[in-house]
Image: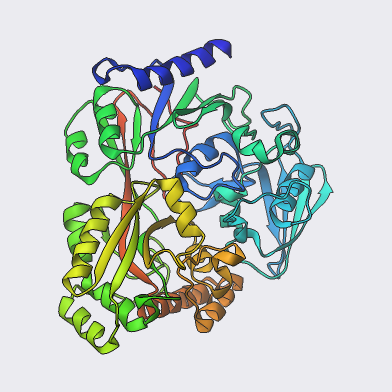
Length: 517
C-alpha cells in the first residue's frame, strides 16, 4: 500500500509540476482529467456528475446500472422482491462484504444510510444544501428484517425507485466512518467499492487505490488519480503531451484530432442529457410567458449545435431527453425565428429588456459554456434584449444558481444528466421544488397542472401510462418555456491507446473497475 501510495502521489505531482513535453504517467496508475474540483465525496451531499464519476468507484449501491444500459442489476443486494401494490421492496444482501474501514456491510448499515438522508432528527442527518435525497421522498421506512434482509416501505407506489437506487445518491456509505468524521465525512469517504480512498489535495488531485478484497473481482489498476483541470484547452494539451490517460468531455474542436491519431481512442455514448438556461419566472422580463417564448425563438439552437458543438448534440425540445425514446411526445424544438421573437416582445411591451445572464467557466455536461453563452447573448441582443454576462467558476456558479435567481439574475446556464424522465422535471420544475424547499427550481416556475401530472406519473406502475404522462409534461413545459431549451449532448471521452476496457455509460458515470493499462 505504501508503494502504491507513493506511485500515485508521484504521478500526480509530476502532472502538476513537470513541463508538458516531459509528462508521463506511471504503469498501472490511471490519471483522469476531470472538468472541475469535486464538491464532496459524500454521495448523499454531492449533486454534480463531476463528483459522481469519482464516487461510483469508491462506493456501491444496492443495485447498479447494467453496463451499456439504464437497466438495473444486482450489486450489494443479490436479489429483491416487490409487493403487488408496488409499496414494499425487500432486498436480500450479499454476505461477507466489508466497508473499506473494515466495518461490516449489513441491513443495519443500509437503514443507517437512508435514515441519514430522510430523517431530519437523525444524529448524522446530512444531505447538503441541495439534497438529491428528493429521489427517495417516497420512502416511509427502511426496516431491518434480519442482518441480510432490508425492507423499504413506500408511502405510495414509486416507479423510479429502483433506478434511483442505482443513481449515485443511493450509494451506501460506511456508518462507522460517518460517526467518526461527522460533517467531514465527505473528505474521508469509505464505501465498499472497487477503489479505496487515499487522499484529496484540494485543487490538485483525488487519489484512490485498488481494493484487493473487492467482492466483485478486484480492479486491474493499482490506483486512479482524478485531477481537476477546469480549462478545456489545458486538458487537451495535457492529453496530447501524455500528462493524463483519460480526458472526459472533449471540446468539439478537438474530437477529429484525437480520432485521427492512433495514439488515442475516442469514446462516444448517447445518454439522457439536457442543456438549457433557467429563466427567472418570478421577476424581471421572463415573468411574462410571451417573453420566455420570444427568447426561445430568438436563439439559433441549430447554429449552436452545428457550429459551436460541431454536431456532438441535437437541438432540445423540452425537459425530457430524447434518450427516453419510450416517452410519447411529438413536441418539436422552437424554430429559429427572430422576427417572431421581435413580435412577441413588442406585444409584451416590456419596459426594460435588460437581462443578467450567469454562465460558468466549465462543469459537468456544460458543453463549451463560455462560447455558448456568448452566442446566446448575441442572438438575444439581436431581437432587442440587453444582456450582461457574469461568469463564475463551477462550484461558485452552482452555489449561486441552486440557491435561486431572485434578486441576482434573469437566466443561468444549466445541464442535467438523469436516469429517468421523472428526475429533472420533478426536482427542477415542481412548485414544491423551489430553492427554499431544498429543490432545484431556481427560476421559481409554478404550474399546478404540471405538478399533478408529475405526481401521477411517478406513482404509476403502468409504463404505457407513464409514457403518455411524460409526453404531457414535455408539451406543457415546452409551451410555458420556463427554460431556454438548447441541446441534448452525446457524451465523449478520449483515452490513450494503452488504456484498455474503458467504456462510457448512458448514465454518464465513469466505472473504472474493468479498466487496465
